Amino acid sequence: MHMKTDATALRRARVTVDFAELLRLRAQQSPEHPYVEPAADGRALVYGELLRSAQGWAGLLDDLGSMPGSVVGLAVADPIDFTAVFVGVLASGRVAAPFDPRATDAELLAVLERTGASLVVSDRPSPGPSEWLTMPAGAFVLDGSGSPLLGGGGLLLSTSGTTGVPKVIHIDEKRLLHTAQAIAVHHELTVHDRGFNPLPLFHVNAEVVGLLATAVAGATLVLDDRFHRRGFWETLGRRRITWVNAVPAILARLSTLEADEVVPAGIRFARSASAPLPGAVLERFEHATGIPVVETYGMTEAASQITANPLHGPRKRGSVGLPVATEVRIAGDAEPGRLGRVEIRGPSVITSYARPGYEERFDAEGWLETGDLGYFDEDGYLFLVGRVDDVINRSGEKIYPREVEEVILAEPQVTSVAVVGWDHEVLGQVPVAYMVAEGVQGPEDRAHAAALVARLQERCAAALSRPKRPYAFHVVGQLPQGATGKVRRRSVADGSAIYTLLVE
Image 1 (cartoon, rainbow, N blue to C red):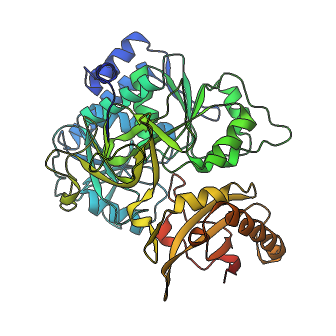
Image 2 (tube, one colour):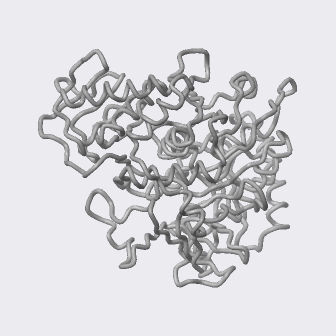
């Protein structure tokens, strides 16, 4: 089955100016309108100042010998400072390569090698003894070799690595703006909107869904350095927020209100992305807050958003929605309900990776294999069941972790779970569950953990056929996660179990 957005929506998502011209238009129309604000009290960056800042960065990069199309690394922790540099690099026709500012020196040097950046803007100390130059605008590293010219501005990103070896991806300006405008149109963003983004700015979600879609709409985005549970709703009320850019891990934390918490009026929706949203979490959040959740699906290779549930109309539990300005199909053009590999193509989707390798993921017609398994229903909504590499093969029967995880997450005490495959000498593989639970913090809580696991055994017995029921339950202190809350499945079995029950 092959789904794509209708022609009218595609025309509405077409960008007719480049990013530099967009900045000039915004500065002319609304010079004093805030572009980004900090979640705490502090300075705002208005559109007029944003243009002047971008022009200043362009001149500084010229003076440093950085050519248009070259790669400029960003390792900036302060959200407002990051935004100013990020916008300045893009508007100057260069390629921004955002790095995690909290990375270790070894991690930073590794990503520098992957991206080939020879110039890095940073507010952190040097990772090496002789390569860094301190300047009034920040810290810069130059290796003297000159970074490769990628042709035009854009982003150079490494994938999260949660599903394998990180890939280096160049997303040009045209793809970025196509996606940003499609997001703004789909979510009906206007100059009156005030979004809230607690997600890391070195990730494509915050960059495109947050910063670029806000600029396209001429709206305002409130930035936090990270998610803070304490005082969350008070902050949103004080900052007059109209929509929230979130991930499932954040929605799970917000799905239970404290006794003195009040959800402010005026929040149109909460957007969920970056990882599968469990149905139980969606229902608990909407019931507790009254805020509708728009579940979406995206990946770095598509400049973020691929599909999204409608803002108005049916939002289907368990579905990542309908294609938005991107073509999506199940390999082999499967009929509705038939499971297969999800493939994508379109104006936002890359046609190759920035470094050699993975050429087999693209076919001759430009379709990119996402690595996800899913199906369309009769209404054209996409449902994902998991990653191709995550499927558990138990004596020839395929088990999809998400189905088992949904059952476990229906237990309110469980806050997060990962089901992975264990090698078994007779069955080949068996499903095993690792969980984080409220009220279980250490060995002293083993009795609570045992009672929880007993309830889960009953729940799984009622909802799952025998092969799908976990062979073992592990209650752990935490699950290893990436920056956006996506569980690193290959690192799950880390020996931190507080309580373990093997099911014979």
